Length: 92
Image (cartoon, rainbow, N blue to C red; front, side):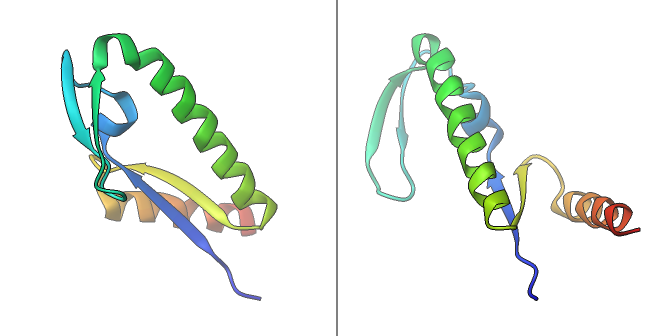
């Protein structure tokens, strides 16, 4: 009877791929450096990201885990407050 909540934090630049021109980014999980052309890669990246996030959400829901994607430019206390308010409304 435990409740599991996943707060998935992502940077705005990671969500929007708002880099200019040709750049290199580091995968913080593997340390690999990826060279990208943000101008030509943006649409494909955003489509792949949306598919990935959708699959992740569904996997969490299948396991009855609450999942919330939060942009790191959003204050965390506000995100937590919003989540708790929504949860309380659903339980009422």
